[in-house]
Each structure stands twice: as structure tokens, then as C-alpha cells.
Image (tube, rainbow, N blue to C red):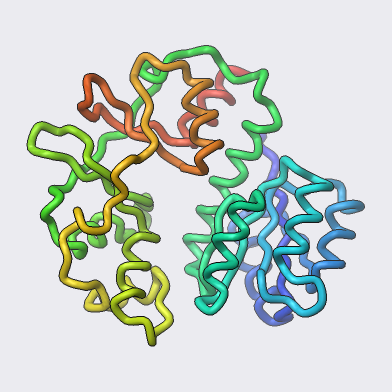
Length: 280
């Protein structure tokens, strides 16, 4: 039986901590809370270990960035997800350079946070057990089918692909292909939010608000905001190497290419599930 993912939730807003802890526990996580950076460090040092820390950046006294630095010294393999407001968006980027797994903007969508915690746990588990990674080829595990978009398609088309249906699986990014199915670039949820934010600098936007009103998106084609050099792997690459690439570049999925054409996508959870199967 798989043990529960151990989460440390750190935020100085007492009501937010209580509400979010209740939600995460209901979703099956084992949750410990802290309301300051100092409490968080005590929990990390003496709390028996955590898989993932969810840490607010803006806190009085020891702020989230300082707390992150100390956590990474005490528990370098523990993944940390930062929570940031629009005003401290640059701090979220700084947190990534300091070793944070990712950041979410407050108020964050609960489903996005749940999914991010699970992704971070998968990456953390692979970091802790690298010698157990199977020496298999990427093409030997099931690749997920993708829906490629045309570079001239509007941003709203990418949003519709990434919109979560009730009970459906979330899509974090869409891949931009030419007419011969050659990979041109990638567009993520964050790219769409940032494009909308640049078009409306006076309004604080996040993914949830963007879903409620896609009119915030500027009328631009995907090619104007896509990232031109996504991290990729080849079908004949070792699974160990692909997993290492995803960890180093902090991505949850990678396109698998053959002769420049996209065959499918390998995801962190695919690697982790395969690892679990090999260890049974």
C-alpha cells in the first residue's frame, strides 16, 4: 500500500492554512502546518521528514525566500512549491533559481496545487532513488498522445485545450507543430497567464481568473508567445537520461522525437509508475 504524501504547509494567514490543510487532508495527503519561517524550519529539522513543502513567499520576519534557503540546506532533496502574489511575481522566479520546484500565484486553484504537489513528490522520489532508475529506453514505455496546434492558431485555442473538464486530466502545455508534424515550440499555462497579464497590467490575473473570462487574452497567434526550444528527448534515449533531463529543467513532460517529428510525450508520472513496477 502506498504511503501518504507528507506535506508541510507554511503561511502566516491562519485561516488560509486551516482551510487548505483541511482540503489537502481530504484529498489524501498527510499535512503539517506552520505559520512562520521559524516554525517551518523546526518542522523540517524535527518533524520526521516531508515529501513536499508548500511555502508562502510573503511572511513577516523570515520571509519565504530566506526560509527556502534554510530548507534546502537541511533537506536538499525535499521539493518546495512557492505561493506568491502578483506583486511578488519576480520573487517566484528568484525562488526557482534558489532550488524551488515551482511557484503558484495566490489565490491558486486547489486542483492546480494538488497536481503540483503530486508532480513535486514524483520528482523528489526519483531524486532520492536515482540508482533504482531502470536502464530502459524511452520508446519502451507508453507515450501519451498529443494534440498539436498550428502556430497561427489564436491563444484562446490553447486555453481550450488546457481547460480541465470535470474529472478530466489537466494539460499543462500544448505543442506547436508545423504541417509536417515537426515540433516548433511549446506554450504553457504560465505563458498564457503572462500574455494576458502583459495585455492588462492593472489587473491581477491567475489561471483560474483566465478560465473564467478568456477575453483577457490578447488577440495574438500562438507563434508570438511560444517557447522555441522546448526540452525534448529521442525515442532511443535511456529512460534514466530522460528522467534526469526533466528534473534538471524542471519540466513534467517532454516531447519524444524521431527525425524531428513528434511521436508522443513522456511524463514524469510515467517514469515514476514504471519505476514502482520495476521495484515490486
